[in-house]
Length: 295
Image (cartoon, rainbow, N blue to C red; front, side, top):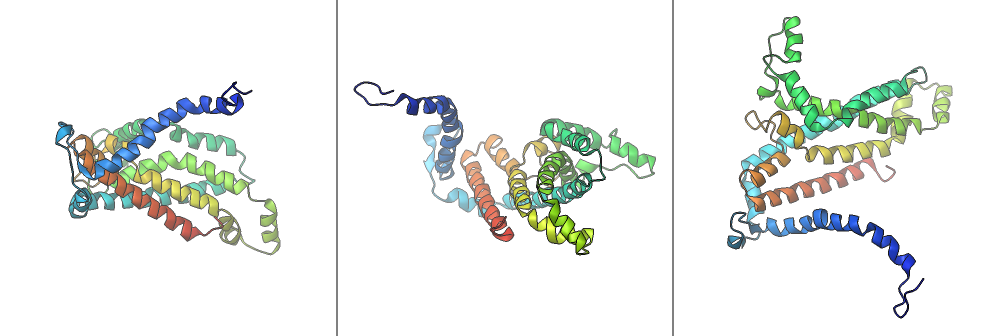
């Protein structure tokens, strides 16, 4: 139907009216802040007195290079990301290979139980594991004392604090990774496995030369999403360690938050945010290149 004298078609307008509220929210809270952060990264923004804010060009990015704490945060983030992504992928793949075998009769039940931690918020998971790691009355030290092992500081020990956090993140994400692996493995035709067995291939050969090559899209998806998520980790660090002890668990997003909301250096925090963006873009492109076009 056309509006007389204007020539506007109702059927073409109505769909846009339905999505207008969502687009408005997306524009205000997602797209506009992106462009604002670009301008903030090139300024010395004074949050107390905005009128004193000045344009400083690349000074915030030059400061990144000279800031030893940003390099410490990057090192912790890379260690954290590699630990969570690859450890999580390997453990979840091993579990998936077991529960997807024909002789395993409780696949749905196992997947449901393993998926429960993923449903919980990271804050709740962090609080639960902080209690388990508590040196004085934590359950883990109670078990260690039962076997004659002296109590450990866990989150208070600079040598293992980040490793303890990695264990928590891997445990929480197993259900999600297993679900993705299951979708990929169950989508492979059984004819490939049957043909391999007829040709005398062992289970390991079948896994290495048939299933894993066919699972490249799944591997790529888990790697890209895993690294993006791990580089953006904040809540688990905030709840469990606050970046300590001795900055050994201070990842880059926590350092960004610290500069923005503790030191009120919004411009420097914006520069850190764009550094994270560039790193993730380069890392994602490298992963696409590594696994090839067929993935």
